[in-house]
Image (tube, rainbow, N blue to C red; front, side, top):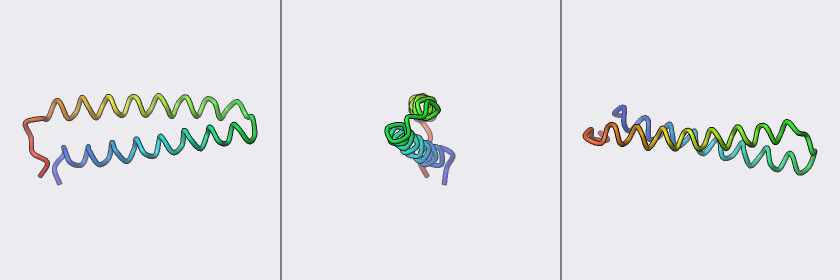
Length: 68
């Protein structure tokens, strides 16, 4: 597995986990009303945006390298 393929898999998994945690924090906030859940939700959203930006940047940087 190449570095490019590893990054694609790792960034995709990280985005999925961050989205899951953001939704979990939102649902937790709805049921408990804890303000910390809002912080977790916002941090998770920022992590998703940062990971998507990094993934796009990395793929653009290594567009000449194959996935194998």
